[in-house]
Length: 430
Ligand SMILES: Cc1ncc(COP(=O)(O)O)c(C=O)c1O
Image (cartoon, rainbow, N blue to C red; front, side, top):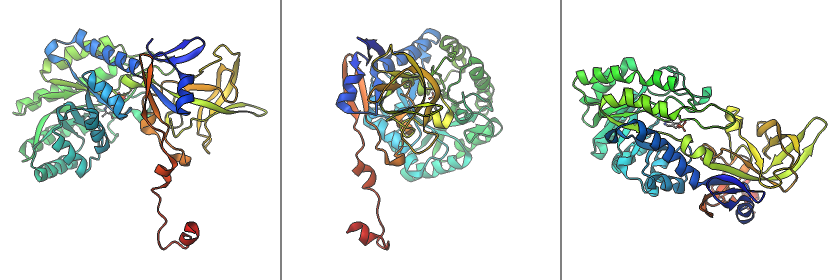
């Protein structure tokens, strides 16, 4: 039994009762199905296997900003995935999970000195460069550590691709990438520098890109610029075509993966480069839920508030992007329907998962899941309201393991320091 399914009236993950997990680990808790992650990886790899020749299969570099738990990374590494990182922290997680340097690509508009140095020392496949000042910095850091940096330039295609303005990254005014008009200059500059080796181009349009036509519009900028660069004597060995593969949160019409892969075969494969992709959400989003307990059902004159113990610090997406997440009870799944505003305990009206949601009626102490929370849930979590970060659990074939423990209050509060000069210090300490 793979994924989230009802068994004997109770919701299970990979055959493990979610009631059991709540009893053992407490709530709120993230629960990830390893079975679903594996299936998603195989589906994506399978679409490429069908459409692309064997020698041009892409390196699927999981964009671990979606979910960076080391156990999740380790699972994907075992399936043959590479890794896309955007910080030194993610690099460290990737190395801990078992990725080799040559399986890792690094993106990000504000790479730090230390991040660049660590990437170079780890021997990563390429640094995706987002600006000319960054190129200069990479060259300087590379000279310091004595390792030539393989750089790929992130092309800003000026195409609006993402499913929400805040997750669209390919428009001209966005902070990402380099305009096509300066690409030749950037490539030439990297070729002249002592410690950079320009190896290719990259692109990432945004997240939740539903239409193949959007990818097509953006990727169709590649052939002309690749041909131009090659005619100027440069080599273009890699094309990183980014992520953005969408998932269903409610009733969205999904990208047709087969026609996407077919298009990659028609346009990217003839350019004769190594191909890299960077899926994040697609691999892990639907694999995770937040398991939460109903704290109270608060009835007012106008509304019923279902107050659960998960909050916006555990899943910021509804507050940040107005995003939809399904909510379901773990037990009593055939209860009569009711209408709720589903909210967390945080002191913000924005701490609302859904307004006017029709679902099975629930009572204090019942368990609910917030669905499709495997991507950009735990990885965007915070300690707002001094709430400890929730633990993470992974399920597989009827078993579960805690893959991150619940944060302790000491871990959060213990880092605060009252300065010596504070008049309150003696009082607080005494
Ligand atoms: C450079 C880059 N690559 C890949 C991704 C992954 O996107 P998604 O999770 O939509 O596949 C992101 C997401 O922000 C990104 O910024």
